[in-house]
Image (cartoon, rainbow over all chains, first blue to last red; front, side, top):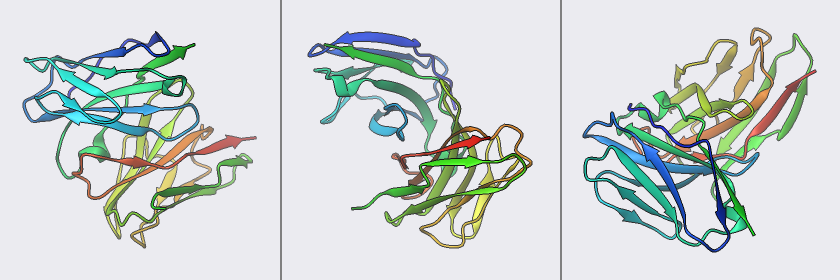
Length: 113
Length: 113
């Protein structure tokens, strides 16, 4: 699986949009981009995933560049409860790829009042 | 409610003792996983199981053992051979190992005293 690069930390004001970048310049054509987040001392929570097209759900939007070498997770209206570590993962969908996957250090997002 | 239950949440172990962490899921998922997380670090895979009565070593399996006798249960034993077992342990599952979404339990904190 391709490796990802994320900034170690970022701050965001409550009510503003949070834009979290992720670089995956070695991504291959059959690898998906996934985002998870982890609130302190809890299990990670699925946010969104995509292959080529931009995706939106009730939690966030995912913007993938045309060359697929980078992506941005957008939290449209950040709240204090969005303070968490956000993980960007790229993965090819095979029967054992969750088993071989490693989560990196992620981006610590702090939402301030 | 459907989900993944890990127990205990907090566990203290004396050096030289084995300890077993419980993981139960009622999601009818075929695949289950154990990850380890050290403070400020990402997740690392210990073991995973794609189906009942089958499991595979992850990247850091030394000093750990698992069993998968029932679909809903995937206990992890931390043996005395694990040199640095103090960590946060996360159990996860997915409907099958190629699924897009993996669900996590709330985690178990293990401290060696």
